[in-house]
Picture 1 (tube, rainbow, N blue to C red):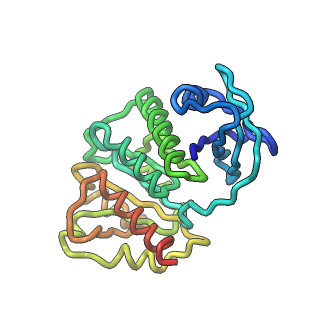
Picture 2 (spheres, rainbow, N blue to C red):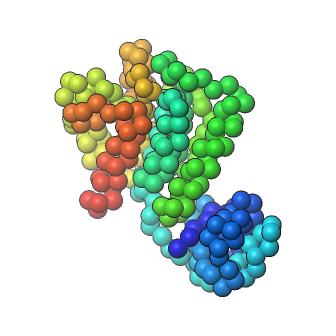
Picture 3 (cartoon, rainbow, N blue to C red):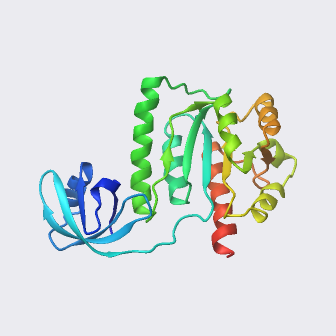
Length: 251
């Protein structure tokens, strides 16, 4: 069933009003009509089955038929910090990361990031990424929509890491050295009731030795992601899949 995210203000105890681009999607793309049902989420743990009562050019008005209790979020919050990659790779990273349950995305400027975003470009790009996240969250039936922050510096990333209890760095040199246990051990010993996970992924050229040392001093654990060397757009997907396996499939 089609799902849409709305703001808390758009959803009361009995009624939902959808506005903006979703109105066109409902009426023109999905060709829905009065009496059809959709699921609405206010991105604050309220999810409801709704019936379309009115469609105009500017809004869709729905009545709430019943509230839905869902358990489709990762039991442990995971943030993916991604070194700015080239081309449109970041779009794929946030799309697939959303499908796999990431809670937040933080792009950051790494030493080997070829891409540079000025303030104007960062705002526009982040808005585009947030739109992709919304669509992916609706498609994958998420109850909560992840957030994509505007890019931060590497120094800011170290400060952000202070609020996380499990801090992972995907480091290709560990994979080359056949390191295969640290990620598994971190996840096995993680407690979903108290822990928050931050995963650092480098850009195409990887992290510099200086960046890795700074991360280690800040309490991050460098991990190999299996015996193969993964692309920057694959590493986060690998870690999210491992977390899902540990906390969802093994429970």
